Image (tube, rainbow, N blue to C red; front, side):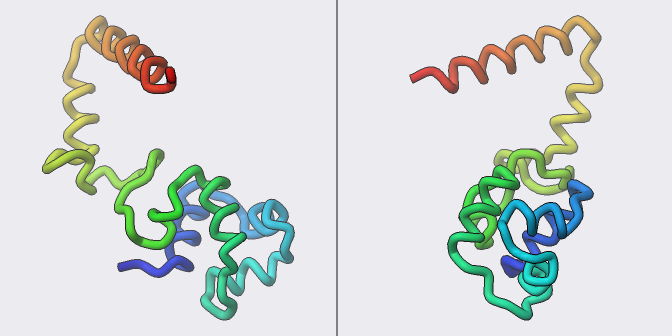
Length: 117
């Protein structure tokens, strides 16, 4: 299981964000944030909560209890059951243009119905 410090570093690097930007968001110095990532300083609970909001991931994900997060670039990780994100993308790419458009419309529809009370 990955450590919190490794997970926050990977999230930051995946998005090409500088430590300084996240430090400013947290209201700490760049050195303090660097110490979080390097394991030289314990990451306070309030910072974990803010980091989950910043990266739009669950606290479970940050703490290593969840495997995936929206926006993950790991195409070979399990997405649903035994299906990988690579499988999903490959299948979408094999659709004809009209079916891709229809799929995108359907995804938009599902997102709208998912957010309704």
